[in-house]
Length: 418
Image 1: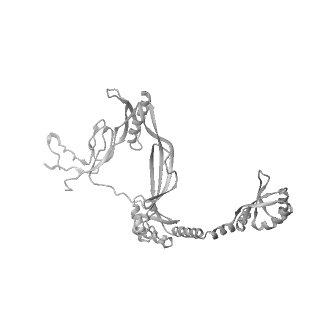
Image 2: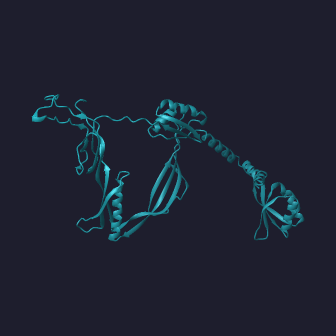
């Protein structure tokens, strides 16, 4: 069936309407003589519409005379008729050929370069190395040697363990895999200080001298585990005599280390929310109108969408796209897409209980937004804030208590390093 349709398109076919006293006899006689008919349909006025190839029109004239029927051509379809129309419109044909050639020419260049897999390396750095190997925006695709670009990236960037360069249409994808570099341990003297205020719950010292204990309240910047380990106190023998081998009058200096450990504390995060009892304003209705236009030298041509916005109140979201610059040539054309979101006036009255519930949600969301990741809330307190005067607002304060490690490194200098 597909081959039959393709051959009919190449040879040309017409849609005809058969009228007369016996159109069925006309169709039967045509079919008996091997003429291919398809899409046969009877219309309301008694005529029959059908499709037939062009080369069968002449034999069907004899059949029409023998059956006392008439037929007329309604539509002409197929390649021969399209070519005949193009011959009458040579300018249109040349324009179509020119557009196809321009599109083919544009698809022969690299317009977009995408970098994937880089976390430590900067994308601009990778693009700069690729440019040294001849890969830039606007370069012909047949000038791009992917092997040379990969070799250049591996040579110039030691952090890259593997790279692959792929051509996909007008886009080039540079995919890299970075090496995992060993992290050098920091041995500089440092304290562990409090990164935030809290109530100490647990102190685990790996190295250093603990300064706080469980139950202490600390403020940001306060030393929790000191990197300065004091020298042990000198022990005297019986009767106040110094033990043999101890030096008289010499004070042993403290040791300086990079303090390490875990200091867990109870920390509180606050959130605030307020909701009016009577709220008025404008909000989106969900309806939108999209307008797409082209701007060229101060002129705007609307491609789709209405010229006049059907909404009385609305807000807009504008997206402007420009063709990428090719070498030093910039095309002054912009494709502008504007979305108009309809706004509608509203007035909403709430009871005090409804307003408090909404205010609690806002306060809890604000407090939870400031929580560190992977922390568990130990206690939650929500209370209404009263100002002592009648208001149209319901104010709520939320407090979340969590237990977390509040330690942070803080380096310090020593007398020996000065």
